[in-house]
Image (cartoon, rainbow, N blue to C red; front, side):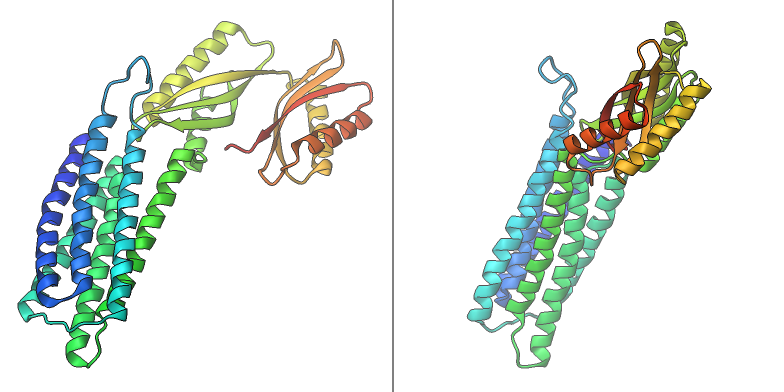
Length: 367
């Protein structure tokens, strides 16, 4: 089953089951006088809207690329996931408000054994939805389904707390309905906040996974004269479309056609194996020369003395004809004053190598 069918199937399943649960819980909540159960039912009604948003988002995301949006509409799924997260937060705040009101103004509860059994059945239905949506999210990498799965698990736990509060009210002369609703609202708000943060992180852009970076570099290494794989950046345009860029080193005496063929082969292999369309930048290096290799090692030592934030170096090239050295130095994100580092590094290098001038870029540790 393809990705879109899985998302739509699970969305329809969630709509049907949540419709049943919402109707059942609202009726039972009104008959029993339990604000926690009514709010739980309203939360299920919100889940119906969430499933509609997920399904519509998936439909829009499948639109073909256009002249205005040549990379397609895949990022719509991030927006639908964000909407789902806000719906969860809204339900949590509504329940929080009604629960506080119930704590201040408690009322008697009545729930028959049949009502309790029905609520228990809805808990198992929510656990079924949690398992189904979690499995579908893993197969499709859908943030919206992932949010729905988390919400289903939180709903199951919150309903369990509500039933427990009702049972306790029969055993002891204490009304815990409002407090149960308060606890449920905390669960829901936590779930919503976590979903919002996770989705926003995807929208803002995240560091490539180490396994992906490692595989990209492995593929590059299989296509000489390419070497390395630096400044790797991957930009996602939805779960099924991604583009990436990186720089590679090539010997300064390599032929242009040889480099082009290697880049094309690496590009195709990365696309076929990882689903990422890559473009390459190129550094011409001459560090096969023993003198250059020794100088590269000494330059690295100098940079390390200037700042412990220095991680590595690449693109090292010595232009003997005009005594000029070019390279990129990689630093971690703890280094905030780039301008100061550049001044101190330049001064230290010129003191160590007075007959050379240095030109270097400062790269953050992208990958």
